[in-house]
Image (cartoon, rainbow, N blue to C red; front, top):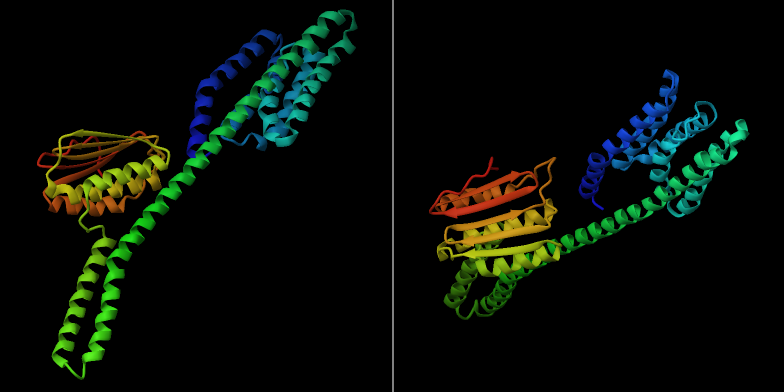
Length: 371
Protein backbone atom coordinates (compact mmCIF):
# COMPACT_ATOMS: atom_id res chain seq x y z
CA UNK A 1 0.00 0.00 0.00
CA UNK A 2 1.34 3.38 -0.81
CA UNK A 3 1.96 5.89 1.93
CA UNK A 4 -0.77 8.17 0.62
CA UNK A 5 -3.49 5.49 0.56
CA UNK A 6 -2.42 4.05 3.87
CA UNK A 7 -2.45 7.50 5.46
CA UNK A 8 -5.98 8.14 4.21
CA UNK A 9 -7.29 4.89 5.68
CA UNK A 10 -5.48 5.52 8.96
CA UNK A 11 -6.87 9.07 9.20
CA UNK A 12 -10.35 7.73 8.51
CA UNK A 13 -10.01 5.25 11.37
CA UNK A 14 -8.68 7.99 13.62
CA UNK A 15 -11.52 10.42 12.92
CA UNK A 16 -14.27 7.79 13.14
CA UNK A 17 -13.15 5.50 15.95
CA UNK A 18 -10.99 7.60 18.30
CA UNK A 19 -13.98 9.58 19.68
CA UNK A 20 -15.77 6.28 20.39
CA UNK A 21 -12.72 4.78 22.11
CA UNK A 22 -12.10 7.91 24.17
CA UNK A 23 -15.77 8.25 25.15
CA UNK A 24 -15.94 4.61 26.25
CA UNK A 25 -12.81 5.10 28.34
CA UNK A 26 -14.08 8.26 30.03
CA UNK A 27 -17.41 6.59 30.78
CA UNK A 28 -15.63 3.59 32.30
CA UNK A 29 -13.47 5.81 34.54
CA UNK A 30 -16.48 7.86 35.65
CA UNK A 31 -18.56 4.79 36.54
CA UNK A 32 -15.91 2.62 38.25
CA UNK A 33 -13.93 5.28 40.15
CA UNK A 34 -14.85 5.81 43.79
CA UNK A 35 -11.81 7.86 44.77
CA UNK A 36 -9.46 10.20 42.95
CA UNK A 37 -6.67 7.64 42.82
CA UNK A 38 -9.06 5.12 41.30
CA UNK A 39 -9.63 7.62 38.53
CA UNK A 40 -5.87 8.10 38.08
CA UNK A 41 -5.16 4.36 37.83
CA UNK A 42 -8.09 3.57 35.54
CA UNK A 43 -7.33 6.68 33.49
CA UNK A 44 -3.78 5.40 32.96
CA UNK A 45 -5.18 2.23 31.36
CA UNK A 46 -7.46 4.25 29.10
CA UNK A 47 -4.56 6.57 28.18
CA UNK A 48 -2.41 3.56 27.22
CA UNK A 49 -5.20 2.33 24.96
CA UNK A 50 -5.73 5.72 23.33
CA UNK A 51 -1.98 6.17 22.77
CA UNK A 52 -1.73 2.75 21.14
CA UNK A 53 -4.74 3.51 18.95
CA UNK A 54 -3.30 6.85 17.80
CA UNK A 55 0.04 5.21 16.99
CA UNK A 56 -1.78 2.41 15.17
CA UNK A 57 -3.53 4.94 12.93
CA UNK A 58 -0.08 6.22 11.91
CA UNK A 59 1.28 2.70 11.39
CA UNK A 60 3.64 2.87 14.40
CA UNK A 61 1.84 0.89 17.10
CA UNK A 62 4.83 -1.41 17.67
CA UNK A 63 6.91 1.54 18.90
CA UNK A 64 4.70 1.79 22.00
CA UNK A 65 3.45 -1.80 22.18
CA UNK A 66 5.49 -2.96 25.18
CA UNK A 67 4.96 0.04 27.52
CA UNK A 68 1.26 0.25 26.65
CA UNK A 69 0.77 -3.48 27.28
CA UNK A 70 2.63 -3.26 30.61
CA UNK A 71 0.60 -0.26 31.79
CA UNK A 72 -2.71 -1.72 30.62
CA UNK A 73 -1.90 -5.09 32.23
CA UNK A 74 -0.95 -3.46 35.53
CA UNK A 75 -4.17 -1.43 35.54
CA UNK A 76 -6.25 -4.57 34.89
CA UNK A 77 -4.51 -6.35 37.76
CA UNK A 78 -5.07 -3.38 40.06
CA UNK A 79 -8.67 -3.14 38.91
CA UNK A 80 -9.31 -6.79 39.70
CA UNK A 81 -7.56 -6.90 43.09
CA UNK A 82 -7.81 -3.41 44.61
CA UNK A 83 -10.28 -1.19 42.78
CA UNK A 84 -12.75 -4.03 42.11
CA UNK A 85 -13.51 -2.78 38.61
CA UNK A 86 -14.58 -5.41 36.11
CA UNK A 87 -14.08 -2.92 33.29
CA UNK A 88 -10.44 -2.16 34.07
CA UNK A 89 -9.35 -4.52 31.30
CA UNK A 90 -10.43 -1.93 28.68
CA UNK A 91 -6.82 -0.79 28.23
CA UNK A 92 -5.70 -4.32 27.32
CA UNK A 93 -8.83 -4.70 25.22
CA UNK A 94 -7.68 -1.77 23.09
CA UNK A 95 -3.92 -2.31 23.01
CA UNK A 96 -3.82 -6.09 22.61
CA UNK A 97 -5.97 -6.49 19.47
CA UNK A 98 -4.02 -3.66 17.79
CA UNK A 99 -0.64 -5.26 18.50
CA UNK A 100 -1.41 -8.94 17.88
CA UNK A 101 -2.07 -8.73 14.07
CA UNK A 102 1.28 -6.96 13.62
CA UNK A 103 3.24 -10.00 14.84
CA UNK A 104 3.17 -11.85 11.54
CA UNK A 105 3.31 -15.62 11.80
CA UNK A 106 3.18 -15.43 15.62
CA UNK A 107 -0.10 -13.55 15.70
CA UNK A 108 -2.33 -16.58 16.33
CA UNK A 109 -0.22 -17.67 19.30
CA UNK A 110 -0.14 -14.06 20.49
CA UNK A 111 -3.95 -13.86 20.27
CA UNK A 112 -4.30 -16.94 22.46
CA UNK A 113 -1.70 -15.54 24.85
CA UNK A 114 -3.59 -12.24 25.10
CA UNK A 115 -6.86 -13.97 26.00
CA UNK A 116 -5.06 -16.14 28.58
CA UNK A 117 -3.36 -13.06 30.05
CA UNK A 118 -6.71 -11.30 30.44
CA UNK A 119 -8.16 -14.37 32.15
CA UNK A 120 -5.14 -14.92 34.45
CA UNK A 121 -4.96 -11.32 35.62
CA UNK A 122 -8.70 -11.22 36.17
CA UNK A 123 -8.60 -14.47 38.15
CA UNK A 124 -6.61 -12.67 40.85
CA UNK A 125 -10.00 -11.39 42.00
CA UNK A 126 -10.99 -14.99 42.83
CA UNK A 127 -7.98 -15.44 45.11
CA UNK A 128 -8.52 -12.33 47.23
CA UNK A 129 -12.33 -12.69 47.41
CA UNK A 130 -13.22 -16.40 47.13
CA UNK A 131 -16.69 -15.90 48.61
CA UNK A 132 -18.11 -14.48 45.38
CA UNK A 133 -16.44 -17.10 43.18
CA UNK A 134 -19.24 -17.67 40.69
CA UNK A 135 -20.05 -14.01 40.06
CA UNK A 136 -16.39 -12.98 39.96
CA UNK A 137 -15.53 -15.85 37.63
CA UNK A 138 -18.04 -14.53 35.13
CA UNK A 139 -17.31 -10.81 35.61
CA UNK A 140 -13.52 -10.93 35.87
CA UNK A 141 -12.53 -13.98 33.83
CA UNK A 142 -15.15 -15.28 31.39
CA UNK A 143 -16.61 -12.01 30.12
CA UNK A 144 -13.28 -10.09 29.72
CA UNK A 145 -11.61 -13.09 28.03
CA UNK A 146 -14.58 -13.64 25.69
CA UNK A 147 -14.81 -9.97 24.69
CA UNK A 148 -11.06 -9.83 24.08
CA UNK A 149 -11.18 -12.97 21.94
CA UNK A 150 -14.02 -11.54 19.83
CA UNK A 151 -12.36 -8.13 19.32
CA UNK A 152 -8.99 -9.72 18.53
CA UNK A 153 -10.63 -12.07 16.04
CA UNK A 154 -12.30 -9.14 14.31
CA UNK A 155 -8.94 -7.39 13.91
CA UNK A 156 -7.54 -10.22 11.78
CA UNK A 157 -9.84 -9.48 8.78
CA UNK A 158 -9.05 -5.78 9.25
CA UNK A 159 -5.34 -6.52 8.94
CA UNK A 160 -5.98 -8.75 5.93
CA UNK A 161 -7.92 -5.90 4.34
CA UNK A 162 -4.86 -3.67 4.62
CA UNK A 163 -2.77 -6.43 3.02
CA UNK A 164 -5.19 -6.69 0.08
CA UNK A 165 -5.24 -2.92 -0.42
CA UNK A 166 -1.44 -2.83 -0.26
CA UNK A 167 -1.19 -5.52 -2.93
CA UNK A 168 -3.65 -3.65 -5.14
CA UNK A 169 -1.69 -0.42 -4.75
CA UNK A 170 1.58 -2.18 -5.55
CA UNK A 171 -0.02 -3.69 -8.65
CA UNK A 172 -1.30 -0.27 -9.68
CA UNK A 173 2.17 1.26 -9.24
CA UNK A 174 3.67 -1.46 -11.42
CA UNK A 175 1.06 -0.78 -14.09
CA UNK A 176 1.87 2.95 -13.96
CA UNK A 177 5.59 2.21 -14.30
CA UNK A 178 4.89 -0.06 -17.26
CA UNK A 179 2.76 2.66 -18.84
CA UNK A 180 5.61 5.17 -18.50
CA UNK A 181 8.00 2.60 -19.97
CA UNK A 182 5.63 2.08 -22.91
CA UNK A 183 5.64 5.83 -23.47
CA UNK A 184 9.44 5.84 -23.46
CA UNK A 185 9.48 2.98 -25.94
CA UNK A 186 7.08 4.93 -28.13
CA UNK A 187 9.36 7.97 -27.95
CA UNK A 188 12.32 5.77 -28.84
CA UNK A 189 10.33 4.48 -31.81
CA UNK A 190 9.60 8.05 -32.94
CA UNK A 191 13.27 8.91 -32.58
CA UNK A 192 14.21 5.87 -34.64
CA UNK A 193 11.70 6.88 -37.30
CA UNK A 194 13.24 10.35 -37.47
CA UNK A 195 16.90 9.37 -37.48
CA UNK A 196 17.04 5.77 -38.70
CA UNK A 197 15.93 6.45 -42.27
CA UNK A 198 18.03 9.61 -42.49
CA UNK A 199 21.22 7.91 -41.33
CA UNK A 200 20.70 5.09 -43.81
CA UNK A 201 20.19 7.55 -46.66
CA UNK A 202 23.23 9.59 -45.58
CA UNK A 203 25.32 6.42 -45.55
CA UNK A 204 24.31 5.59 -49.13
CA UNK A 205 24.84 9.15 -50.37
CA UNK A 206 28.28 9.40 -48.75
CA UNK A 207 29.30 6.11 -50.40
CA UNK A 208 28.01 7.40 -53.74
CA UNK A 209 29.81 10.74 -53.35
CA UNK A 210 33.07 8.94 -52.58
CA UNK A 211 32.61 6.73 -55.62
CA UNK A 212 31.98 9.53 -58.13
CA UNK A 213 34.18 12.19 -56.54
CA UNK A 214 36.97 11.77 -59.17
CA UNK A 215 34.74 11.04 -62.16
CA UNK A 216 31.84 13.46 -61.63
CA UNK A 217 32.74 16.22 -59.21
CA UNK A 218 29.55 18.20 -59.89
CA UNK A 219 27.31 15.24 -59.05
CA UNK A 220 29.40 14.51 -55.94
CA UNK A 221 28.96 18.13 -54.83
CA UNK A 222 25.19 17.82 -55.37
CA UNK A 223 25.12 14.68 -53.25
CA UNK A 224 26.98 16.48 -50.45
CA UNK A 225 24.52 19.39 -50.58
CA UNK A 226 21.63 16.95 -50.27
CA UNK A 227 23.37 15.26 -47.34
CA UNK A 228 23.80 18.63 -45.63
CA UNK A 229 20.11 19.53 -46.15
CA UNK A 230 19.05 16.12 -44.91
CA UNK A 231 21.15 16.42 -41.74
CA UNK A 232 19.81 19.94 -41.05
CA UNK A 233 16.23 18.70 -41.46
CA UNK A 234 16.89 15.72 -39.19
CA UNK A 235 18.36 17.97 -36.49
CA UNK A 236 15.22 20.12 -36.65
CA UNK A 237 12.95 17.07 -36.45
CA UNK A 238 14.93 15.63 -33.52
CA UNK A 239 14.74 18.94 -31.66
CA UNK A 240 11.02 19.16 -32.34
CA UNK A 241 10.58 15.59 -31.07
CA UNK A 242 12.59 16.27 -27.89
CA UNK A 243 10.59 19.38 -27.08
CA UNK A 244 7.24 17.93 -28.11
CA UNK A 245 6.90 20.22 -31.11
CA UNK A 246 6.13 17.63 -33.75
CA UNK A 247 2.74 17.74 -35.39
CA UNK A 248 0.56 15.35 -33.43
CA UNK A 249 -2.79 13.77 -34.16
CA UNK A 250 -5.38 14.63 -31.49
CA UNK A 251 -7.52 11.54 -32.04
CA UNK A 252 -4.47 9.29 -31.80
CA UNK A 253 -3.35 11.08 -28.63
CA UNK A 254 -6.79 10.64 -27.08
CA UNK A 255 -6.66 6.92 -27.70
CA UNK A 256 -3.08 6.68 -26.45
CA UNK A 257 -3.90 8.64 -23.26
CA UNK A 258 -6.90 6.38 -22.60
CA UNK A 259 -4.82 3.23 -23.01
CA UNK A 260 -1.97 4.49 -20.80
CA UNK A 261 -4.23 5.68 -17.97
CA UNK A 262 -6.38 2.56 -18.00
CA UNK A 263 -3.23 0.45 -17.88
CA UNK A 264 -2.27 2.40 -14.74
CA UNK A 265 -5.59 1.50 -13.10
CA UNK A 266 -7.62 4.67 -13.72
CA UNK A 267 -11.11 4.86 -15.15
CA UNK A 268 -11.06 7.17 -18.18
CA UNK A 269 -14.19 9.09 -19.20
CA UNK A 270 -14.05 10.93 -22.54
CA UNK A 271 -16.80 13.43 -23.25
CA UNK A 272 -17.21 15.16 -26.59
CA UNK A 273 -19.16 18.35 -27.13
CA UNK A 274 -18.09 19.38 -30.61
CA UNK A 275 -14.73 19.24 -32.37
CA UNK A 276 -11.98 21.88 -32.01
CA UNK A 277 -10.51 23.69 -34.97
CA UNK A 278 -7.94 21.47 -36.76
CA UNK A 279 -5.40 24.25 -36.38
CA UNK A 280 -5.45 23.73 -32.62
CA UNK A 281 -4.89 19.98 -32.84
CA UNK A 282 -1.15 20.09 -32.25
CA UNK A 283 -1.35 22.31 -29.15
CA UNK A 284 -4.20 20.29 -27.67
CA UNK A 285 -2.33 17.05 -28.36
CA UNK A 286 0.79 18.33 -26.60
CA UNK A 287 -1.22 19.39 -23.54
CA UNK A 288 -3.01 16.04 -23.44
CA UNK A 289 0.27 14.11 -23.72
CA UNK A 290 1.95 16.20 -20.99
CA UNK A 291 -1.07 15.93 -18.68
CA UNK A 292 -1.17 12.16 -19.14
CA UNK A 293 2.51 11.90 -18.22
CA UNK A 294 1.98 14.10 -15.13
CA UNK A 295 -0.94 11.95 -13.95
CA UNK A 296 1.12 8.79 -14.33
CA UNK A 297 4.10 10.25 -12.50
CA UNK A 298 2.61 12.54 -9.85
CA UNK A 299 -1.01 11.51 -9.20
CA UNK A 300 -2.82 8.43 -7.95
CA UNK A 301 -6.01 8.98 -9.88
CA UNK A 302 -8.93 6.57 -9.83
CA UNK A 303 -10.89 8.58 -12.42
CA UNK A 304 -9.67 10.82 -15.24
CA UNK A 305 -12.18 12.89 -17.18
CA UNK A 306 -11.26 14.28 -20.60
CA UNK A 307 -13.70 16.82 -22.02
CA UNK A 308 -13.22 17.76 -25.66
CA UNK A 309 -15.24 20.60 -27.12
CA UNK A 310 -15.25 23.19 -29.86
CA UNK A 311 -13.37 25.62 -27.61
CA UNK A 312 -10.66 23.29 -26.36
CA UNK A 313 -9.87 20.56 -23.88
CA UNK A 314 -10.24 19.95 -20.12
CA UNK A 315 -8.48 17.12 -18.25
CA UNK A 316 -9.49 16.43 -14.64
CA UNK A 317 -8.14 13.76 -12.29
CA UNK A 318 -9.00 12.95 -8.68
CA UNK A 319 -5.59 11.77 -7.50
CA UNK A 320 -3.68 14.95 -6.60
CA UNK A 321 -1.78 14.84 -3.33
CA UNK A 322 -3.07 17.22 -0.66
CA UNK A 323 0.20 17.93 1.11
CA UNK A 324 2.36 18.84 -1.87
CA UNK A 325 2.06 20.11 -5.41
CA UNK A 326 4.27 18.58 -8.09
CA UNK A 327 6.51 20.74 -10.23
CA UNK A 328 4.85 20.78 -13.63
CA UNK A 329 7.59 22.30 -15.76
CA UNK A 330 6.16 20.74 -18.91
CA UNK A 331 2.80 22.49 -18.54
CA UNK A 332 4.56 25.74 -17.69
CA UNK A 333 6.46 25.54 -20.98
CA UNK A 334 3.33 24.59 -22.91
CA UNK A 335 1.44 27.55 -21.46
CA UNK A 336 3.64 29.93 -23.45
CA UNK A 337 3.17 27.96 -26.66
CA UNK A 338 -0.60 27.87 -26.20
CA UNK A 339 -0.59 31.61 -25.52
CA UNK A 340 1.40 32.23 -28.71
CA UNK A 341 -1.23 30.22 -30.59
CA UNK A 342 -4.01 32.44 -29.27
CA UNK A 343 -5.19 30.18 -26.48
CA UNK A 344 -4.97 29.95 -22.72
CA UNK A 345 -3.82 27.11 -20.45
CA UNK A 346 -4.91 26.95 -16.80
CA UNK A 347 -3.88 24.31 -14.25
CA UNK A 348 -5.44 24.40 -10.80
CA UNK A 349 -6.00 22.11 -7.83
CA UNK A 350 -8.97 21.93 -5.47
CA UNK A 351 -8.54 19.29 -2.77
CA UNK A 352 -7.59 16.03 -4.46
CA UNK A 353 -8.87 17.16 -7.86
CA UNK A 354 -6.39 18.53 -10.38
CA UNK A 355 -7.70 20.22 -13.50
CA UNK A 356 -5.91 21.26 -16.68
CA UNK A 357 -7.86 23.35 -19.19
CA UNK A 358 -6.73 24.72 -22.54
CA UNK A 359 -9.13 26.88 -24.52
CA UNK A 360 -9.04 28.87 -27.73
CA UNK A 361 -11.34 31.73 -28.63
CA UNK A 362 -12.90 32.05 -25.17
CA UNK A 363 -11.26 32.48 -21.75
CA UNK A 364 -10.63 29.37 -19.70
CA UNK A 365 -12.79 29.11 -16.61
CA UNK A 366 -10.42 29.62 -13.72
CA UNK A 367 -11.38 27.43 -10.83
CA UNK A 368 -8.53 28.48 -8.60
CA UNK A 369 -4.96 29.64 -8.62
CA UNK A 370 -3.16 28.62 -11.74
CA UNK A 371 0.28 27.17 -11.94
